[in-house]
Length: 81
Image 1: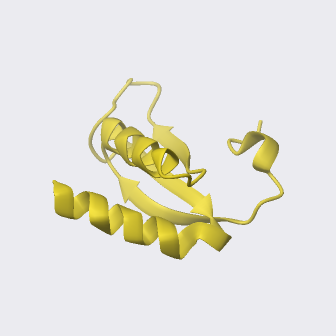
Image 2 (image 1 turned 120 degrees about the vertical axis):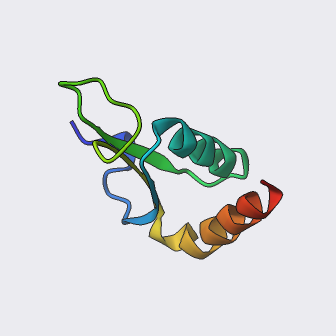
């Protein structure tokens, strides 16, 4: 099953990578709250149920047409932290 669901025909680009799943979920939520259809693709080591560290990479993808706007929002988010 494609992690991008009904948007499988959209060209997606990697915006952000982290090794904490919760952080990626926050970034996706922030982007979505600003109208960017971000998608989270977790690569968690399910055999050990790790959610942090090098075995729990999480990637945030955005539509390529919205990449610059999403990058600006991500920078804005980081400055607020």
